[in-house]
Figure 1 (cartoon, one colour):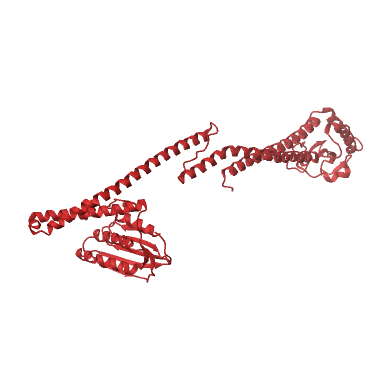
Figure 2: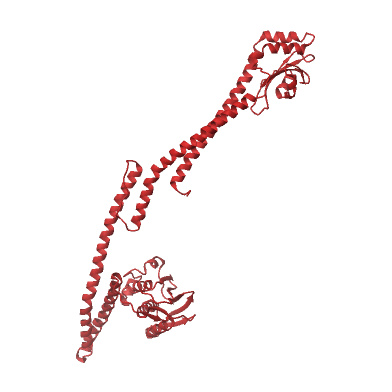
Length: 483
């Protein structure tokens, strides 16, 4: 779900709104706090620092019989200008040496007085107006008189108003954030839909094209970049469809040509071979150079006949016209028979051809003749491409419900760059050697077709030099199936 581009866009926009609202809220709260602090310290400094008449009155109060009470009366007269309300903002007259409250209209709340940095500064003889958002209260402390008879005018703000304003501001920000989230969710949903819908349509069309369906194309609904992409995709799809149609026509023509040529060549080749064999059986033609020439004609006609036979086999595969004769077969006796038939050819080349069955294999259903053709092709390749005096080993084993047949040789091997193409039609690794040995380049292609029709697989591994191993895996089918 979260991998959807639509959901990602919605989440990104919502997170953006939350981040903006949070940052805005933090700045507003800090701004209100800073304004309140500046307003408090500014008004205190203006009242006490620029009022000479007040300063003279406070100093005169020191000579009265009750200086603390006299100062309290003087400050009370200016309480309105200082914002003193008896609830949030209070004032006291403090002892200049200890900072303890001596007088004031709010002595019942004297526990609100702590030895703040401003009071300590006033005890030292300097006025303290510094405030911080981290302080429990905002305060100012103004010393009056010399050390021996010093009193301190102390005004403190309990920050109740600031807390209420901050709380109200946070509430407003949270409500605005909640409202903004709803609006942003709706808008982001609509925005993401306008972006993702064309992409989703394009994706579905691409999936249909990948499956070979070119019947529908995504609509171009606007003139933005996504529409340009859609038009480009439609053009590409049309070009690809046309190319595939042309390729299918060419493949059909090629298959038909191969099929027709193979059928047409089979009869004259049979006649050439028959006449050559007849002439070789006639002594007057079989002697001297004439006999050699007839031998060449017979040999080449046999090679052409093999090529035509292989082409006809592949043509039947292409058109689905192969005649399968499915019956019970056992791989071990079948491979033993194939190796026996190939033994004379192996001995002629000085090869050691061995067959080893590691496990007993049950009877299974398959086309015995076609399967023998597979292993004739594979073993022939191993014999032909192994230098004289080599070793070819055929082995079988069972892996669960699968028979594994390997044909291993110690021949010239196959270069790594050629391995992916060894099953292609007419592909030959060593073309000169293949032609000299009469190879057509179709043996492994035919083998793969037959193995795949039996629901199996065939693979080749090799080191050049170092030999080649062909591995065929065929299912042990307990019930008869059609190839």
